[in-house]
Amino acid sequence: MKRFIIPTLLMSGVVSAKSTHKPLKSMLLNYEKNISVNLKNIGSNAYKIKAGDTLASIANRHHITIKKLKKTNKIKDKAPLVVGATIQIPDQTIKLSTLLEQIKNAGPLLKEAKEHLGKIYVWGAVGPKTFDCSGFTSYVCRKNGITIPRTSIQQGKVGTKVSRKELKEGDLIFFDTSKEKKGYINHVGIYVGDNKFIHASSASNQVVISSLNQSFYKARFKWGRRVNL
Image (tube, rainbow, N blue to C red; front, side):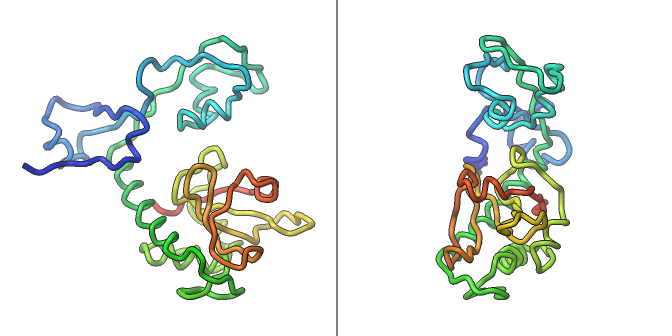
């Protein structure tokens, strides 16, 4: 009997098929027609606000957008959160075909990116032995069948724009690393999850994984772009 394995990306929550009563094998074989997937935490959808919580931290913990959290609970802009109060975590239903497409694309893209860790940074280089920042991202994307422009400033205009709180693995992320913070894009990397990203760094002189929580990158982060779907 064939085994159907849902990757570990799904193991952070309960996966429920909102569909027919057909057997799992039949549904997976025909997922584009009749299945949606609800990714939600085990137990109740209610969440009790704790000291130190913010809308951003709650949304990030439950893998939803701040906008959706505010809309579900009818929270007005700048309204304070009350410790001990209960809010509802919205339903997180997406099409299974969309979920599987995200897994299929982000996995190989990040695998390819990590294979180049330690390779030397050279301005203007597009790989495979040396890279600059946008040369690295364009090379990794191209190896995965995704065509994006050559320069970081142009790459920052393609795909779907996302905020830091909405980042998913495989998203391109953009920075203004100029000392004067001139307001334009001049650096790009690939988000790998857990507030980290992989990039060809001129400061480190190689391809490295850095933290978005570093004060330098945190202050200069501009936005993300989703181009892998």
